[in-house]
Amino acid sequence: MADHASPRRAPATPAGPIMLYDGDCGFCTRSINDISGRVRPATPIAAYQTVDLAAWGVTASRADHEVLYVEPSGRVYGGAQAFARLLRTGRPAWRPVGFLLALPPTRWLAAGVYRLVADNRMRLPGGTAACAVPRPPHPES
Image 1 (cartoon, helix red, strand yellow):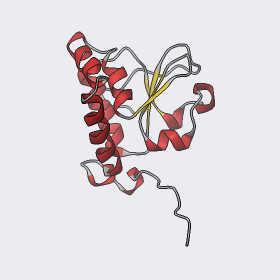
Image 2 (tube, helix red, strand yellow):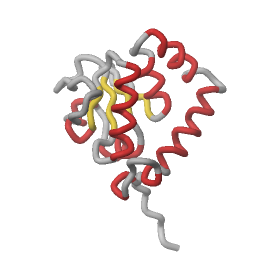
Image 3 (tube, one colour):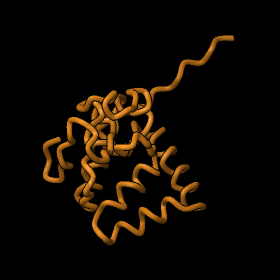
């Protein structure tokens, strides 16, 4: 992640919150870099492939499925709520947006939009086959 809007370097151990995203996904990397450049969050952001996930209390399968905001307490926010938490640590203009995204019915709408985007990220600009969200295997009948 070496472009002009690179997120802050992630700490090796949980001393504060962290935002984790799929660094193998071009769409995710581009999106995180754009958001980081605009919002300037105080929270470090890192590709989940570059951190010790066990130290953060999350699994690779969860991190493959959605962006995660992990607090030092161990509380994990996923998807749209991860972005809501991140926005609340950004520039003052973005903080109300983060609070709004956490309130119903905006929360429900944001969750639906997030899942729609995440499930189709390989089809979006910057997306590749590597961006596809892994699906659980279907049992054979």
